[in-house]
Length: 153
Image 1: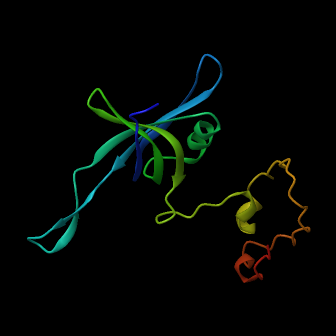
Image 2: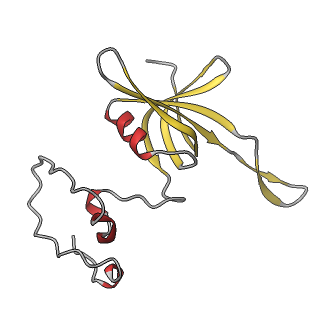
Image 3: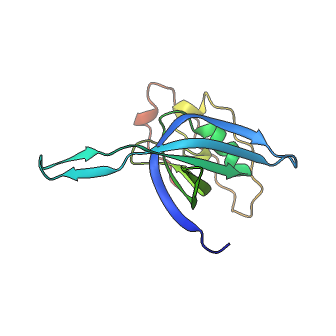
């Protein structure tokens, strides 16, 4: 579509992520991101927070399921997508959403620390053409996992 405005927003998730399914069974999630602009106050010579701007984000497909599982209230996120003004509210039809690593640490299946992997269920194998990795070293106990040598990739 022409005339769409692509935008990148950074902010905190406000409230819960609502996950629903369309009539065809496609997952769709909706959540609000509060973007707080930083403004320089020349009179005081310092930065301050501006007025919060709520942006309603919508995602579909596998991204919707992932967002509903990973995002909770107050998590910092970065989202990109098509921005539109509807009913005096900003709406972002998001193409990508991710945790803002400037504020959080995020793990994926392959980088999960051993102390957390012991508690987490085993990931399901992915069908890929990637070469088979050598067997991982046994998980260290919770007390000394940080002393073990780093894994080689």
